Length: 435
Ligand code: UD1
Image (cartoon, rainbow, N blue to C red; front, top):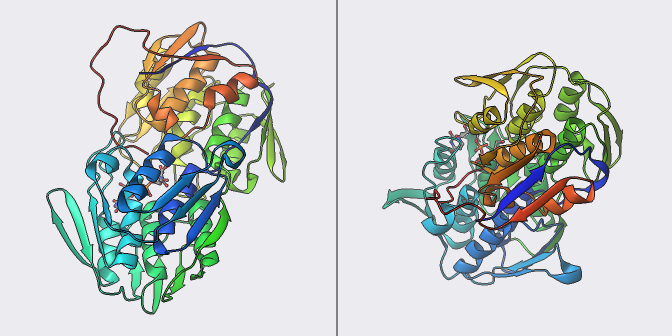
């Protein structure tokens, strides 16, 4: 199993280019199931979750071409016929977002069979809200042998009020509603930019959606959708991770090809900690020449501070003067990185959903274990400022969502390399689904 070896101490200098957003690419790939014509997606990041989605769609009978060479970040998906509208446990267990195919499949094929995701590293993560919403749209749902089966002749537009804000739940039902008979009004929707990006693709495919990106979305159902070409938005979490890396290492880093409008909460919080940034239309330059100050942070749904940046923020808080209280409001068990940061010398105490980070403690290199995608990113950040050589195990988590992270970091001055097995074998937990 691959590991990353990072020698800390180098400031990050230069320009890093941000890839397309994994969390926008995944629902957009699922949306291609809604039509029998080709959907061309540009700016697709080359990460493991995209490959998992390719396998998922191909297993159903869709043709999925992932571009190589010059067509590098393009994928063409053609779901002409879908012989097996199913998502198996084997795929869903490694990527929970596989449940995004439930809505499109039942809308297009009148039936879907999707494995329940089960537990995951960062909490229970049920899909009850997806199921409830589909029932509102007239689908008949049964659950058996760990699978959800949904059937419907044609879905019918309805009013759906989400009990809780859910990103992929909003996306799943939005896709289903595009082909429903009549109008659907969805309330208490997720307002994430990835939802708006999906709606932009769906509208380009002939859907009639209004209000995506706000908490009320209206969809006028159409009889069928057609092919389209769409460019995926930049990854705001990758951008945020590199901005923190620039600040933490005392570097001067230009984070290019991002959308600063999607980074407002992150940039505001970093400004509170004393990080200086210069924002342009599609880039953020971070200048880490000031000492860092503690600042409390709560994760919230967009436009609040994203839970997907909580772990990275905690790495920064370990190096800020004073005490930062970090509250995780979205997932109940998302502090696994804290124990590993403590092993590197951080002073962090966990009390339920609160982490109390006493900052300003020097970090020293250690062998650490990545537990999920964003936790891995926080360990990379800590390693960049730790004294000595940190070895991060289970890098496959990182590969699910960060494109070429070691190449990108190396280009701006980090001392980082990927190695195969350098420890004697030990029992590794299977790759569970995570964010
Ligand atoms: C998405 C993102 C993930 C991010 C998360 C929160 C993708 C592929 N993943 O995950 O990176 O961390 O949003 O911003 O876009 N919930 C229920 N019932 C449901 C659905 C969700 O109770 O049916 C709960 C979850 O357990 C969680 C909260 O709602 O506590 C938010 O989860 P949700 O927004 O659905 O996360 P994901 O869409 O899975």
